Amino acid sequence: MKLATKLIHAGAEPDPSTGAVMTPIYQTSTFVQTAPGQHQGYEYARSQNPTRFALERAFAEIENGKYGLAFSSGVAATDAVIKLLQPGDEVIAASDMYGGTYRLFTKVFEKFGIKFHYVNMQQADNIVPFINSNTKLVWTETPTNPLMSIVDIAAIAAITQKHSILLCVDNTFASPYLQNPLDLGADIVMHSATKYLGGHSDVIQGALMMNDTALRDQLYFIQKSCGAVPGPQDCFLVLRGIKTLHLRMQRHCENGEQVARYLRNHPKVGKVYWCGFEDHPNYHIAKKQMRDFGGMLSFELKDTSIEAANKVLSSTRIFALAESLGGVESLINHPATMTHASIPREERLKNGLSDCLIRLSVGVEDVEDLIADLEQAIG
Ligand SMILES: *Cc1c(COP(=O)(O)O)cnc(C)c1O
Image (cartoon, rainbow, N blue to C red; front, side, top):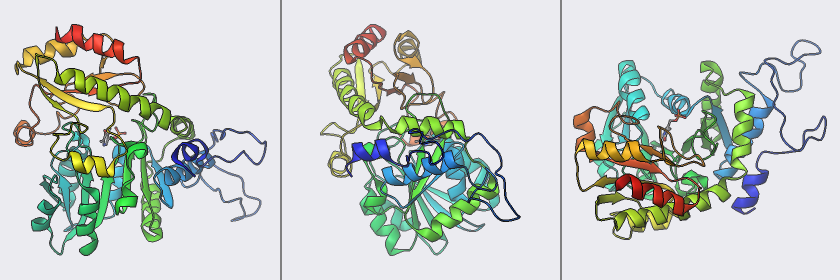
């Protein structure tokens, strides 16, 4: 099946008991047994829930994976992956990534004896010097949040496969509409389903997709043992969101491109970070592994004072000043004080994330209104 058909039908079978076309919300914590151990495959909803199972089948299909697992948030999904490891194990992680992932690694898992190396992965070979016999996992994100750097997934996968290291790709920014890391050699794909998969800014959820059965069994064991499962209502919302992913993403991409080009031509705007510009350092890789360039971008004003950035951040009327991304409505965000505040300032600056960087999640509104809004805010 082609992507649009898959997105609409993935995981959804008419409900066998009533014929309901939409997956029912099985709002139940437990399931009756006719005799001890005699049940219909459902015992207790932390371990099994039919609404969640439908969503997990959909997760697998949309990333061309065999298995999907749903979690109560994106960071809970990340947390489950790191729980595959043991004290003494080492992880190579991208230096430019979601602030909450960095916080989880440094503030929670380092104290359990797991060591993290943060590496700029724009050149895949940069990870090689950090590989040793304790290295168990490479964690990367592409395009990165918020600097829109591109990592060559196939090139990283060639290295991790040679050394039998797991590769997990956070595919939140691209969504399965733009890129499928399992097809490029990744072992696990992670999503904050809160963003493009849900698509309507009304749910917090995470996802993992994979092909390997043993890996799926370990992650399912962690999911049910640690218990960060989403409720059935949230699963329903994400199932519903996925059905329109291709329609929304197409418009996000079209609007993103127009806003990026508008900003680049604006006399008051300095650098614009968007991976669809032909002079973006890894444009050729983006072109190779992505179907289009998405609706996320960041920019700096030529006036690099905090005051000038703050003026724009507080003057937009359609772009709402808020954390998060990937919903139908446009958002504007200040990474240094909002989404990436948990990364120490020196670390941020070292990775090129300035105090005056502004990030946009370009929504699916009429692009003329979006550009007019930025025009009046930048002034
Ligand atoms: C939001 C986000 C996360 C965390 O997901 P939550 O659903 O907020 O827990 C992880 N990675 C990226 C790239 C994100 O944007």
